[in-house]
Amino acid sequence: MPNNLCYQVFVWYEQVSSKFMTAYLRPELSSLTSYHLEAIASNVIKLDANESPYDLPLEFKRQLGALVQQDIASNIYPDGIYGALKQAIADYTALSPEYISLGNGSDELIRSLLVISCLGRGGILIAEPTFAMYGILAETLGIRVYRVGRNPHWQIDLDKAQAVVERENVAAVFVVHPNSPTGNLLNASEIAWLKSLPQRILVVIDEAYYEFSRSSLISEIANFPNWVILRTFSKGFRLAAYRIGYAIASPAIISALEKVRLPYNLPTISARAAHLALEHSPELLAVIPEILKGRDELYQRLQDSGVQVWQSRANFVFCQTADPATMAQRMRSQGVLIRHTGGGLRITVGTAEQMARFWSAWQRAGG
Image (tube, rainbow, N blue to C red; front, top):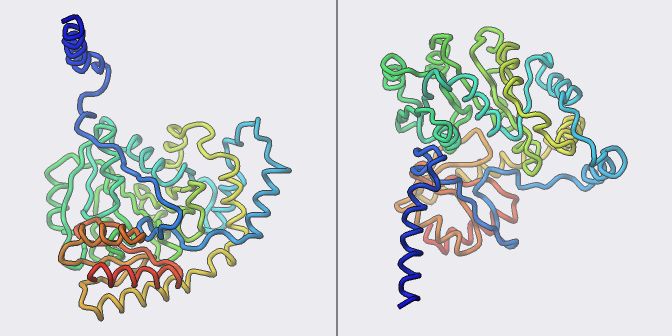
């Protein structure tokens, strides 16, 4: 009997605590889910995250290691101004440092852009499928997300997008150039629509895959002070582990980003790695033609096999199968990770050896 009483008290306590002990949290968080990541076995081939399939050259790693041993004092905070890296990025983009702000990956910059443009002002507009973090980060901040679709060629439904702008309180529009997961560039109509938006709306153009597409709207920054270009070192420059992104925008927007940026947001080793990567850019980017060749071969082979697939300007392709969720799971069971997203499958281009293993798994999975 005493044990039963103790159990009843425990159940009562759990019920009461679940109601009152989280009263200090925002109630809308209960409807959100955390970004799910799984432990990855060492023998698994990752073709699901659009990373470069090539690690940094050994000599680059030696130079970075020498910086850690000889130049970086671990007990000292980073140089929070990051002047040298901003100048190096400015040289790479043919701009001035006052047009550059740095982030711990593009995700931090997206969050900061939401803070300076949407909090207390309005929601964001996105066209799905697209990069999921725009909506996820907005929702964590309590910012409303307006979603419109795309046509069969994955172009934005501009009629619906314009209707949302006219009807709702849109403070920012987020697009990707080229889009993820579909790989298509913004077309002339989409760019014209972005140019037509009132300047009270922040326009964010994510060029994460610029080193692969070589297509940029950076020249429009001077003409549209409400535009922001996002780029990253995680893709073409092979620095995904170091988490370095940067924003290109008018000095007014950059000033606002600097006001909300956390102090020392980039570790010293990350800032030095990015600077070193820019110094070695010809060498690091030399593998991109090989990746693009592999992308085109992947597209053609999928098309020849009867799979619906779209041409891409990034380092991945997007395709649709009868049951993409099952196909992704079958591939996982064979040690090859691809991404089930947007109603299809996004497949990152790997090395020749990785793609050979991909095709073996794909055939066994019924592809």
